[in-house]
Amino acid sequence: MKGLTNYITELSWEDIVIFWFVHIDDSYKKLIAQRDSPLRRRGPEPKMSDSEVITVSLVIETFFNGHEEIGYTFVCQFLGYLFPNLLDLDRFNQRRRQLISVIEATRRQLRQQLLDPEEKVRLVDSAPVTLMTYTRGARCESVYGPEYFGVVTSKKGKFFGLRLHLTTTPDQLIDEWILAPASVHDGKAVNVLLEECTDLAVIGDKAYNDEELENRLWRKRRIQLLPLRKSNQRKQWPDNVRRAMGRVRHRVETVFSVLTTVFNVQRPRGRSLAGHVVRVATCILAHTMSFLIAQNPVG
Image (cartoon, rainbow, N blue to C red; front, side, top):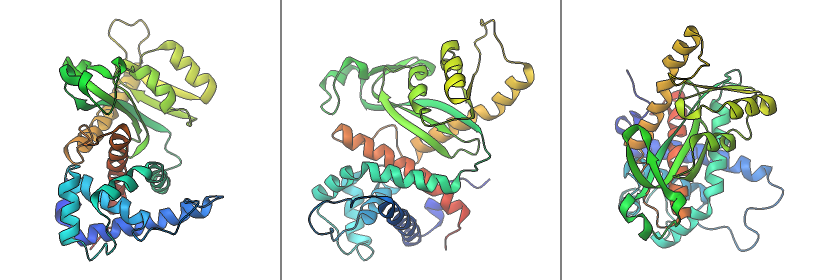
């Protein structure tokens, strides 16, 4: 079976980078055209374009597990002919952090091209994003506070950092995502995660059991939350519904597996909260770009 990210080792670097840049730049131009005001209020346009900054960020997260120094050095030495106006690393890092909202807006625009408007099922789950070991969490300089100490129930372990909450389609395309402090419960985060959504059936694990939340989502947004029931609950799903949920439930776990093993999303290498967020956003954009490459073979 051909994997979603097999192209990383099967295609040439040049083909992948050009494909990324063309789609990123097209989306970027559409975003700018939709704005009522320019992205930059003063000064000339930078020589290294925003699309180039985002593309180089994809290279770093996809091929170098987020090692910015190593990845950027490689781009300078071996891909410099594709990026003739490369900045020094510090300036690149600053520009990259400034583009957090643009990176996410670009992803959302590309996502809309890939989403089937008739697909009304989403899968929801969360995973830890570790910034420090639990015992050293109090020394972390990028985030601070007791809310960043969390527990991974499935592994019976503790961690310090953030928790990535996301929804995917049954075909494993990421729809919505947010980052929250590690201690925020899945049930609380899902209300924010689905804030802009309506008319969906959302399948989750047992952590999302909350009758009040289920009623509120249905009443306000016509979202039917379908968590796996605990064995001691009186209200259980019919057998056919439970079996159908079981058949698709694992697919969101596969998404996290790809984000972790291929894009290293669970251990971002930022030095500030903004640095962590932009790296996670870039990883999710890279995951979305994988679907575009699958639909539009390169080379």
